[in-house]
Length: 154
Image (cartoon, rainbow, N blue to C red; front, side):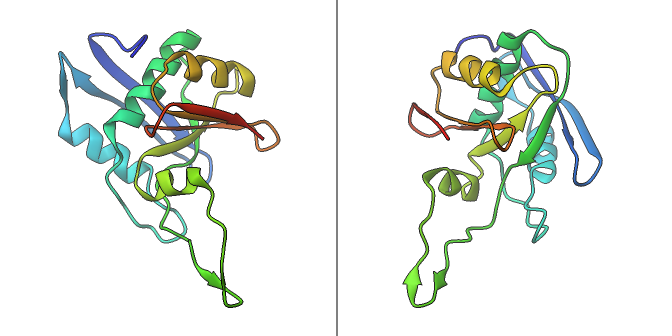
């Protein structure tokens, strides 16, 4: 993956809760379990307060994207893990977006930076060539996941 480095540190803020996290989560080839646990709690489903393990690969993609953008600003996290909300409605199955499945597995983050446009983040994440990248300019965030390499724009 392009741009990750010998150590990996990442910082996020979460506007809904006012929480902030800054953690070194990888050093010399090893993930730091306590840091991954902290990120997992930080990325919990706020509606149900459910915590699920966040896949370290999506954290790596976020870190590599951040390095390519050459900023020290923390990401704003809009959505991390979400409880699977694929439900039956009016007797029919609701349509589930592919990106929602990755959120329900702890494999996706919806992020933004004040100092960078959605398009700048989108293009940097695509350069990582490491998973799914979605641009949501009307919502002002970029979706990244550690699924198959693909990209889209809404």
